[in-house]
Length: 80
Image (cartoon, rainbow, N blue to C red):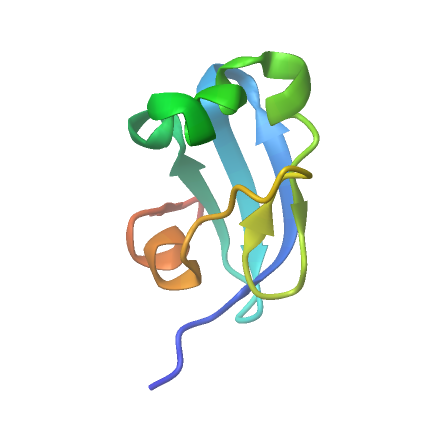
C-alpha cells in the first residue's frame, strides 16, 4: 500500500510541522530529533525552519533538507 503524501505544510512553534496528507489527514510531525549536524542544523534557525514547503510528496527547505515521506506519515500524530 502506498502511504499518503504531504500536500500542505505549516511550520509551528517548537519545531513542529502541521501537515495535510493526500488522505485528508491533518497530522503533527516533530522535527526536533532531526536537527543535528551541519546539514539539518540549519533548521535550528526559526526563520529558516519557517520556510518549509511541500512538493506534493514530502516537506523540504530551500537548501535541500527534506524528510522521507514514509517517516513523515508513520512518525506523525493525527490531529483528528
